[in-house]
Length: 261
Ligand code: DGL
Image (tube, rainbow, N blue to C red; front, top):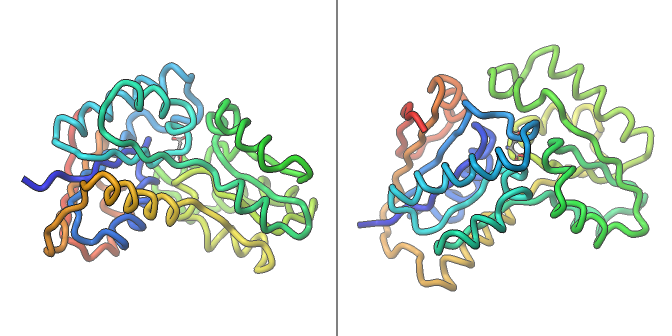
């Protein structure tokens, strides 16, 4: 049997990570869980986020996954330590890419857009303190953005208004790097770039996660030996339509199903 890579997120946003992973690991099979019923995690308590992460992990393990990608900054920053101590499979997490932004900034001002759950986590504070001592970091909670994406309102007026509200103060502070600390936000990049202008570099962690996955699979001899293009199963615990829409451009062999979890 070809053991798949398991991926979960609070919703459909983690598909931005799935895209990067399948681009560099085309022969791997994957199983993706979209826990849209419980989105947004960013507004939930740490305890709830841990419980959702455990539930998602156990479902992926019951389906034979050999490695799990926590494709959610909020779930990673609040629960990855517990997942790693509880289960034997390797976990790859995702955290806001503060370090590269801090190393590259010329204006010494960087912006970060993430959920409340991520920005208030101990893991995020640690990373931020470590790499941004002499840098002005403008943190902004992207309240409402995940819900709009989950509701299929990616290109709505409400979205444009919220983005303007959140990004304008960062532009005033002369940021030259904007870190996207939520896996839903890469789907907003064209709109964000329009608002912040081309002189602000937008950084997300998708490619880094995919590279790290590749390196852990190699190190642990878990990489598939198959030379056939992988097969991809997506499960969502609400309506399948939103997941189908976000994947409508995907040409790979995949199925989208509703599952109660
Ligand atoms: N994609 C999740 C993240 O990366 C969204 C969290 C949420 O559901 O609020 O943080």
